[in-house]
Length: 181
Ligand SMILES: Cc1cc2nc3c(=O)[nH]c(=O)nc-3n(C[C@H](O)[C@H](O)[C@H](O)COP(=O)(O)O)c2cc1C
Image (cartoon, rainbow, N blue to C red; front, side, top):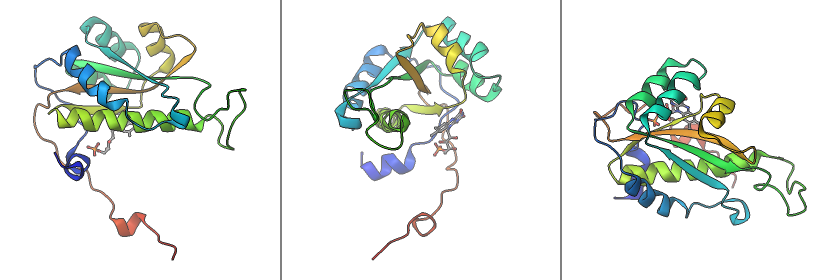
């Protein structure tokens, strides 16, 4: 698959077929996603693949801030990925001081790169994904028993798409690019 096609054709998928997504397939995707760049190669991203429908439904029912859209997406998906990141690493020096003026910012930045890398690799395998930012982090951490050393940086619904979806309108290069010569 051409990279440009993956970037342009990947869509957020919120309706999935009944086909399951095996842990082995998720493991294959993650084995390539680990090549995503990160702050000083700290590689703080960890993926939790939730295939258990009881736990998945608990997140859908109790941990999406009442946002029904995400609740439905999570229930409909055969699996859910919690993208977690180790705190106090990305953006920091070894002595615990910030390396830049942007404080903790780089932790989420790394998580975003890792998440999109994961989603593009999943797309290459024929899978659909939906990155979700609307969730109650405290509740997700409780349900998944995640320690305070980690943050939940994103949730990703994953499965085989039920049907193709429209491309949401994009800005053009002229809209978003300014060149200084
Ligand atoms: C950080 C982030 C948070 C998002 N949160 C949600 C969400 O909570 N629920 C949802 O349905 N989609 C969510 N999305 C998906 C966006 O709505 C989607 O990427 C955007 O509309 C463009 O559509 P496309 O991904 O199909 O190109 C999120 C995407 C990102 C990058």
